[in-house]
Image (cartoon, rainbow, N blue to C red; front, top):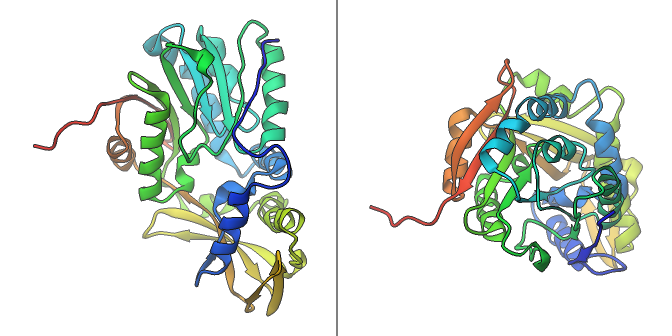
Length: 325
């Protein structure tokens, strides 16, 4: 098993960026916490449960697309690429891609270090001849890839429509950061969810079993545990809305009553009905997806969708900056 690790976050305690984001976000007029902080170990486990729910179509659809088209991706990418996955989570879809390719190595990047290492070990056991070098880092910021990759060309893998969690501006910034991380000549295989029926979208993010609600509420449990807070988690409920002008699903934590709580000695107050905005999931048309990639510094090479056009896999190539005419 060829497994080595790189760490870009503190080895113990909490990430200071988590504290900074929570304190700043809960001090704003519309309280908000960036979605990446939903993914501690428990959050990551709950998200994997979400992906198996009958209402949650994105994972099934994208997995089927990968199973059908990974060979075509490999044919375009060629052999010997370093496969770099951004926000790898359980790496559940990754074997479909790796099995179709002859990669030089696999580099999963994730902010949840314990869960990352567990998933990397499982994948290294499945591909014993493949070097697996997990990197614990926040991939929304520039990431230093392991030097042992050398000059191998890179294929970025960004499944799950995770790009949809970001605003258009932040998504463009991330795509540019990914291009800088991967370097000249890189390719990117990215999943993007499509705009579709409102009711289908709402069901996917507010399932009957309440798993997505538990995933959302777990953020408050994490804040209590890691930041010395005294939030009454039971005083909040999971709320999902479709924001049509922004073409996105929004997840919120809504206060059931007026309350006060402290985080690391700082006091906060919320009124009944007030919310903490925890996640966006933007949906893209074929045209807006192409425009997003182009603005982020990528030229689309191929696109694959399911027969109903519910989800898309896009393969793009990093392009050098071109002077404006």
